[in-house]
Image (tube, rainbow, N blue to C red; front, side, top):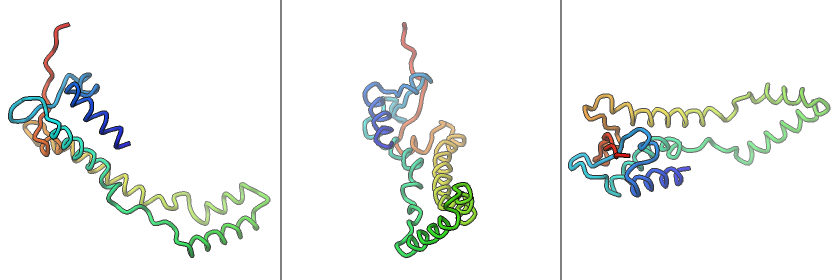
Amino acid sequence: FLAADALYTVGFMAAVGQTPGQMAMGIHVVDRRSGAPATWTQIGVRWLVSALLRQGPKLLLPPPPAADGERRRALQADVKKLELEHGDDPQRLNQALLDRYGRFAGRPARLVRVALSLLAGSADHLVMLGDPLRRCLHDRAAGTIVVEAARRPR
């Protein structure tokens, strides 16, 4: 996913100066000081900071712990026991498994990682509300600013 995002964003901005989304919105990214089109370095920094803020918590936080061998064997033995007790009725077996392990077993750690990514990604854009030039964190890091694109005659 990150590679496709980088190819889309950096590729379009380097090739034509705008992504299709920016074209549709009538905006483009320029160097904050000179007003010249953003350089490759600025485009790359801008994308990298944005990607790290969006995906960083998911990438940096450790994944939910996998069951170690002993715990896995105990779980397998427990499931086999439940299968022996309820094997003739799949609905009862499913309910027994849900009762024992719960519907959200193993999910809280994933939810925390996703929530942190949403918060970090939102923070990137919320910063612009307090900036007179309406720059996000990725614009500040890259030294860029978003401006209206010049309209081309048809």
